[in-house]
View (cartoon, helix red, strand yellow):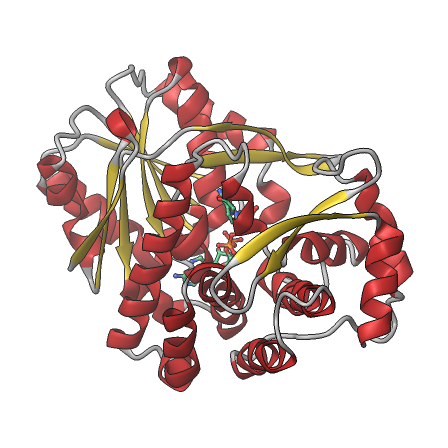
Length: 360
Ligand code: NAD
Ligand code: GLY
């Protein structure tokens, strides 16, 4: 087991990471000084796999627990699911000393975190992420949200968890496609912050794809460490934290354009990262060889890597100027400076189409 700390003054918390540690979550929470009743939030398939293990560990440590299940899937990351959680908390007379536990992927983590941010004006919560994407990204950094029918994550809050417990064994039951999608975010950390980590991923991608324990532990711990350092520098994304959006601008556009049905988030980010690297190469910020290495690694991770032929770049980019992060018709793009660095640059949608079309 190893610990990565997110240093945010009084909101600091540890990320405990290892194999099989879900069955120790009760003692880990006790050691962290978490008392009071515990509400476990999950969805039916994840609860079926891991619910008993978590509940038994909590009860063995003396916690009084209640479980709330919300339906599976991004379509249920909404206020109706929040309502289910609030109803259960009220029914079980939870008070401000209570703690919520998010047992599942990023959807469960985001909804549970927002419920914790708002119930009784804020109670504590613990993340038990069970997807690779949630382990390396969604469970760390305190962004919580639910979707509105007119947009993703439109209703949310910054609310840091009190503890994150990552059981790497849970990745063994994750569908391959979900695992690969999480790997896109792992690759992202290498590109934006850590050239040596990128080389590690190049060398160990086969081991990572067969879920080799040592390789996975190093990849997840390093990813969490990089995300923690960025969040520490800019918790509320006034500036630097936006580097974590590398590949996400075109990725989001691809997800939205295809109705959130054709691509998983990480898959769309994989395509977006290659486009962002191409844009960076066009600006002279990264070499053709570095662009090729990024593309090769994404492809080796079993991820999609280019915009499908049936989608015109113009159509894809058109919605971007309307994006909530655009300003005066321009979009703040995260570019990579070689492998291991970033820079922000503003582009209009037309400039993006022109730059990418000329380089492809
Ligand atoms: P997800 O939560 O939908 O989980 C993917 C699927 O895997 C689900 O069907 C789930 O039931 C299943 N599953 C989860 N763990 C499993 C396991 N161990 N074994 C078998 N099946 C398992 O998807 P995700 O990719 O984890 O998260 C995506 C969400 O995370 C999006 O809503 C996104 O907005 C959010 N997100 C948030 C942040 C943040 O900073 N808060 C960052 C990135 C993404
Ligand atoms: N997923 C980007 C962030 O947490 O800021």
